[in-house]
Length: 87
Image (cartoon, rainbow, N blue to C red; front, top):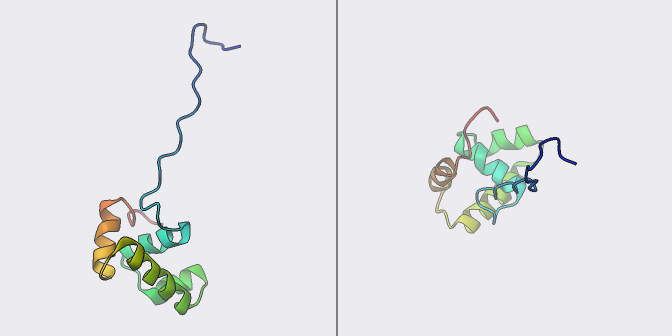
């Protein structure tokens, strides 16, 4: 029973869809770091993965976003709100 008489109980609102739903969580994470200006080597060190793994993710990101290069992918990420803050 509600402690607010007459209150309408509603289910919580679903979380909004993440930007670029075609990307995996890891790809979105890497895209955000690219948008912050991180190099592939810096990303690899931070995520404790090989440089080759980061390069594969970056290639996948470019393909899925149909981005020609890091600058284009970064610009799209920034417009979507990725890459801001101290992540």
